[in-house]
Image (cartoon, rainbow, N blue to C red; front, side):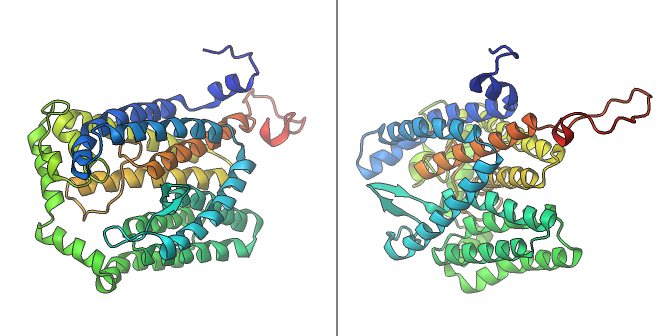
Length: 388
């Protein structure tokens, strides 16, 4: 598409972007439009709006998400770091505002209204939290700044406290896993790793004892009495390998959140297990490419940031699909790029944009690779130093 000698911003962006990752994201975006079109009319009918109400809003959110992703992918490390820190501070304030001003929906306060739009601040806090913790932990490891480690602990505690008050156990789990993975990759001492593992095992039991909302979902999962999960499982059985056909599904009418929390079940019924596997493959490619780049990088901040963003994205998709297959209790988490939801769609695009921006910086600032010519190097390091 572009000549390699072309030094324009667009050309440099094209040649430094991971096109496997970009292609998978584009496929998910396109698939999301068709999946929302299949799952949302029955929900729209229940609440008394036009059949294509959710589809039109999804397209509007998608039109907003694409430029956000592209702009984020053009940012360098410093810009991404500043965006993450400032964004997290703003989102912490908005999460606190949901507890005071947010409307209660299904026993939880997760949304706040801004200029007529419903916003879920915890969604936007996810990539910002990963970026900020990556900066704090890399400062701690590389520059021996002890407050970096302490502040990451403080941020985690504050985030968990606010999310449990909402309550949002699924999102709490995502933040805990993100922080634990970053701390481990940043060089966690073995004693602290063991302690964190024990705390991770004990956390669900503590939540079961003190959070009735969580206990109810676990009880329904263990006894097999969760109605939505049972209908979702039946959708997989009805769809088979190739599905019953677009807009021909019947079971989606019995799922109150068919267009969001259980859209994977709608995909299974109407398009079949084959398309479900294609979607799974797209998520797998994104995770594989992301962790592959993290493993090859030499900058600790980028290693941690890339790993954190990929882990969040992959875990969210895995939790949604696992709850639809009744492998875990239902969590009320959207499927990135596929489920309806403005906050989820924009955040997924922002996450992928930040990820592509980090990978681009890795490709632009590759260290010089020495070539073994058999002649001893007596001239010192190559021109350009560390970055070649």
